Image 1 (tube, helix red, strand yellow):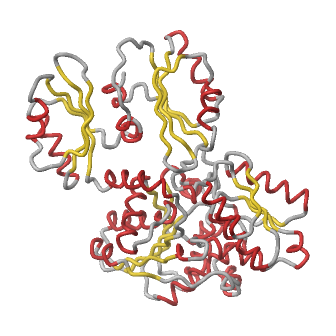
Image 2 (image 1 turned 60 degrees about the horizontal axis):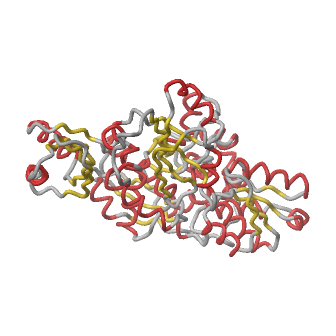
Length: 502
């Protein structure tokens, strides 16, 4: 299987626009993990992503007539910029269909490379459908972001560079969305040196390759997480899966918090800020080392891109503290009397309190929401044990998503006059007017008793909503919510809500 791609990769034309990126040793990570960790810096490409390689190689194969009719692509970011720059270099017109949810910084980047941007739909699938319609109507050539032989071959040039730069490797970790990058690298490596392990890394909430490998056929995920938007793909490509099922050694998944921590790790070693998809492979590498206990090996991860919004950094920094187990959040019940907070703090010793949220509940006790710094996971368990031994009722909420995303940022407290309240969290496409559209679609059938909205600089906003729904109306609420076509979750029994807001 891999040998069918070797000729394509060896003949791939990418260096008219792409550069040979360095394979950079990560000194701090290497010392900490007990292995030689090296980062392939694809974030240093002119469009800050590897996508340029595949797009240009595909377009370089087009005839003069095809170039004259122009190309079209659907993308929310990196592929779009790669196609736009390639078209500029080849002297053809490029139309890029982007979802309306695409951050303005990415739209502006495509325009700066000379691409014509058409905003259509809220999702990549809607943009892709419209792009293919343009192909039929105007005879343009569709440049697929991953599921194309020449695109895959263009990405495979990264593998040639890696083996030239450091031929003695033990494993390569590759981020996977649609699979073009992984297929190109895996095909070349397994032909030249099959002893090198090829490990695909996906987000836990967008693991389409893992699902396909388990079932030995392509599947479509019912939902896809969008934090690592560069790899937020519901179904692995047809051609990429054909290659990957024969060439990869395993698939590892990483959580959002683990990806955030990997972004920080890359920054500390390189002073570059990877996008979430760009740091995904390092998150997988770290889990692999922890699971296997390997030492003194040479491990390569692909930093695939650096196209992230500045506004997302506060969220990334916040989540990193949780992932590294340097901070925890707890619900603690303390007596409602003078000196209680001082006594509580004294039990923590030299541990720092990072936040303290409180609202009066009764004359007998107070429910506090407290953030505490600690040394490691054992120290976190020690805090819980210590507080329980001293008679405090404590609940660890460090892994509670509603507590981390919403409750810790809300002010107010309980509403004793509110009855029949149910609580849901939603994700909806983020663009001007999106919040009002969400409220209009929710309608006025039920009174909104609580509302918290927070945007993380991403394509989707996150909302927590309280609604007054009587018992006899409970059966009607979820069918109405499903009609909104937004991802939602019932949080009515979530302890973070129960302790602080109900």
